[in-house]
Length: 304
Figure 1 (cartoon, rainbow, N blue to C red):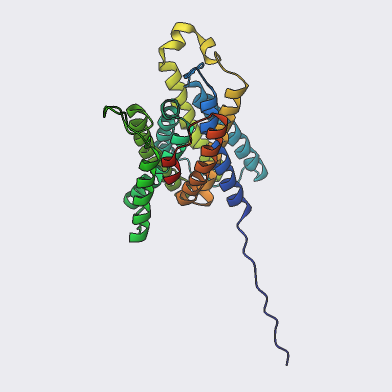
Figure 2: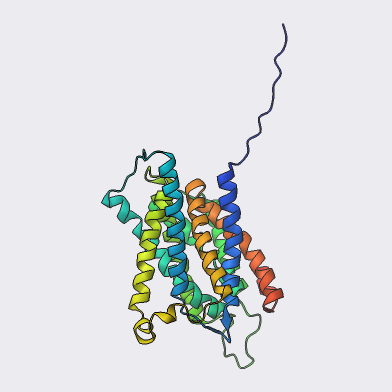
């Protein structure tokens, strides 16, 4: 009678999850840094509406290509849900991300890349609240205390460290406009993220087909925004390319890939993993901004 050998099985994180999280972390860092680097004398030399436009069209082209490949490999035998309710559901997160992406340019211009990335942590609090309301996810008292500490830390990081001698001036480093828009942006992004996860996990469609629906709506919103912009009619279609460079092309690619990476995180992980990636990006952006853009290194930044 022999005793059977017991072996310990190792559980590895699936490759799609690792790739999605890593891409989310890296690309989240570079979005704010590249956007800030594209400023010239504090202004953008290109129409900021065109960056989301080209990014959405790029994402749509990539997702369509990948879906058609999968469709061909399956010999056209795919169980697709393209009822009106499913198609319309994709418009909700797409609209919120569309508004958020356009607000990013103003916020980075007003606050800088470091403050922008630090205040991204406010999305964690907003996401938790919307998760509680929409997804019915309950948080314990410890998690709520951590969220409150996070909010306090974000506020501390924005203190300038010294007020003017006459008592005037703001104790914060950024502008009122920048902070107001960032607060709105945090709520929009968090709400969009929750609805995006609900959409991606709430129907049986393949991942690339789901992305196609999201990016069809995103492309529609960005095209409409460019058409509504009066400069298109005043200056002609040439303004769609005016002021663009290799740097803005990289920025477009960054927005495109971070969008796909975000969908991957929502599909294979969840919003909590997405917020961890944003938190990790905060340290990288802060270090690069201090070294590359010579932003001041403040004690309140470290404490926050």
